[in-house]
Length: 226
Ligand SMILES: *Cc1c(COP(=O)(O)O)cnc(C)c1O
Image (cartoon, rainbow, N blue to C red):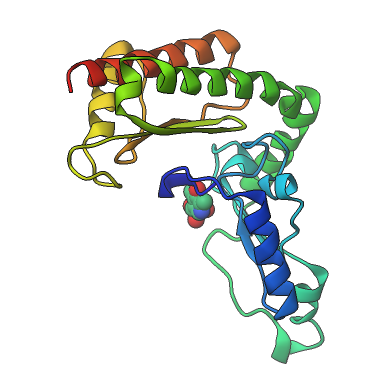
């Protein structure tokens, strides 16, 4: 899932083919799971869905539940070994907030919450409701008129809409849905012609249903006035 590049989904077979090509040509495969990690697509890591293991792996967002700055780049032992064995090989890079103790403490607490509140187990039900709501947007005779495609994977639902401006990241249709949703009490982030939701993974089910109903009503309102 590409995140803000339009919530586009990679077919697992594509990712496996990329992995095979990288392995064959000894090229490092970097998977950015800043957005998709920590269960966003269902399993802890989206790459698990494709059964692909990268050489480098980027983490942030869900790492601290988004409440404190914290990110990590995880590598295979082979990549790490390239920096071991003396000063001349050291990884000479640091950044302002490296090893922040508060961030690290919260990152540990997030893992405890995932374990104690069984966050991953709750994603299936939320994913089902999100998928059904977005499919309903495509199937509805009114809102369906402006839907190109809906995509749902894990706790992500997205509707790519038709736009008379030509679509893409700067399209206006998403803003119109955003305004309709604001009036109804939900704050969406428009991505041009893509309207999407990525609620907290432990969002109470009644709040999720309210959000999804607002998205449906808002797309329908825009379609009715188009
Ligand atoms: C948010 C996001 C980033 C940015 O992460 P930072 O930790 O803020 O640099 C990178 N990749 C993806 C896929 C994201 O969604």
